[in-house]
Amino acid sequence: MLQFIRSKVTSIFIKVLFCVLILSFAIWGIGDIFLGSPGGRAAVEVGEVSYNSAEVLDQFDRARRAMRLPPEYDEALRPQILDSVIDSLTESGLYEAESRGMRMAVGEEALKQWVASAPAFRDQLGQFNPDVFRQTLFNAGLSEAEFFQTLQSDIKRDQINAAVAGEATLPNTLAETLFAFRAERRRADVVWVSVDSISEIPEPSAEELNAHYSDNQDAYMAPEYRGATFVALTPDELAKEILIPEEDLRAEYDSRQAEFGTPATRDLVQYIFADEAATAAAIAALTGPLDIDGMAAALEAAAGADSSIALGNIAAFDLADESERRAAFDAETGTVSAPVETPFGWKVFLVKSATEESVRPFDEVKEGIRLEIAREKALDALFELSNAFQDALAGGSTIAEAAREIDVEVRKVDAVDASGRGQDGNSVEGIPPGRRFLATLFETSKDAQSDLVESEDGGYFLLEVDRIAPTRLRDFAEVRDAVVTSWRAERRGILANQVAGRIAEQSKAGVGLKAAAEAMGYSVVSVGPFDRSGEGYDSTHYPADLAPIVFELATGDVGLADSSTGTAVAALVEVIPANREEQRGTWEQVVQELSSSARQDYEDTYLSSLRGRHGVSIDRGYIDALMAESQ
Image (cartoon, rainbow, N blue to C red; front, side, top):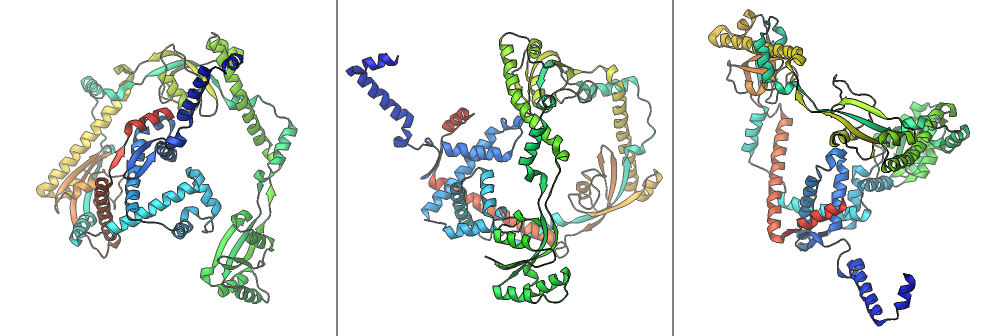
């Protein structure tokens, strides 16, 4: 073929053809360099601000990774994540377009101050740490340029919103009305009629049991069960058969000394002085027979309580500066380190105690090392085994024949439901761990063979569905005991509610709640004060709607609140109005919520006006096509 091309390349026609081909490659292969953005055409446009396909996909991937969804939810939630990303980019674009129109800018100094004060970028000592900063950006999938670009946009957005919403406030009467409603509390007398207090229950008739069975068929459905033949290649089982020579274990141990060691630590107190002279004076004052506590007291008096920081037991790497590490760890126990000049002032360290470095002996960690190495080798071997297994299947072998070729056991599961339980209700043993095996089992048709699937533990499995027992209503005879138990529980609830109803009727008739309860063998308990949410009483004991029901009563009225464990009879005893002085925290929370709500309303209204001012264009068809290509 090459010789043929060489022999014809002198032809005018062939030369023209080559020029056309070269031009085609230039246009379609590298045309973006000359004809458009390398990120593709605009997918979201807001005024003069646009986001191309690469930016949309990057934001989508970043959002998806940040959510850390399980595999079974990741696919289902992709449309919602994409909608959220498009909305977020649109809002960012609106604020960016507006800030450009205002000629807003964020200086480098403002960016530095924001980063230096951000808690996310501080180390254990509360100081800004460049390594923490870079690691945080790496974990978020952001470059420094992307981070600072986003930070600039966010700062400008915050400045615009601050000007729009400002100190948004609402009329005081609105806050007072909401506070009076939310902070009102009540006391009630309560009689608790539990289902367990109902002991005398007649035996159910056959008609009653059959009716209960018919009315509650959903509770007596047997799930779908499936049986399968499968082969599982697991790294842990394969690792058991792999022998690792002693010299290899010893070499691995020697290369990982740091991993098996505990670093030296010092219990340190840090003192910061304004200048070198003050530091020298403080150290010179440590004369006489001073113990550690005495030295600490003298240094704290010289530096001041605010400049004395107990660091506790820390390792050398916990100190960010190399000069600080040398000073602190070169000093002996019970002494003060050499002074160190830092951006925050002059520091000295008092060494209260020291723990030297230690290394766990080889015999103690040998087995763990062996298992790690064996598992790594097993993972490598599994890849080869899985390929050999697939080759055998592709050659027409059955699962059993292919398994014999690689000397792997063929296993069976007779009946398992989608949750991994057998017909006895217990978890089925011997199947691969994780959700993938069960998901594959219930997605595969009867007598069909699944693909070779990687399991969560790094192994592989392949299965063939032998039988499917579809979901069905269990026969009455199978579940008679369960029906009787359920009927009794329901009957107890009905009788408890009836007893509570009689107590309420007698109380309303003028007998009084206490006398009516005692006549039925129950007692009254004072409950509260509590608010509308039920805070103030044991919500795990009483029904969930006890508080709402009590808040509907007038003083002296009686109401019922029932649950699966019983029925409460409640009489309102006292209404405690909201008190701003006593409930200062609730009042401030109400004011803050209303202010936040007002600010949000202002910002939403302003954002809506920006849409009309700048215009928004979203090429959803293009975005959906990009998403389909990227998956």
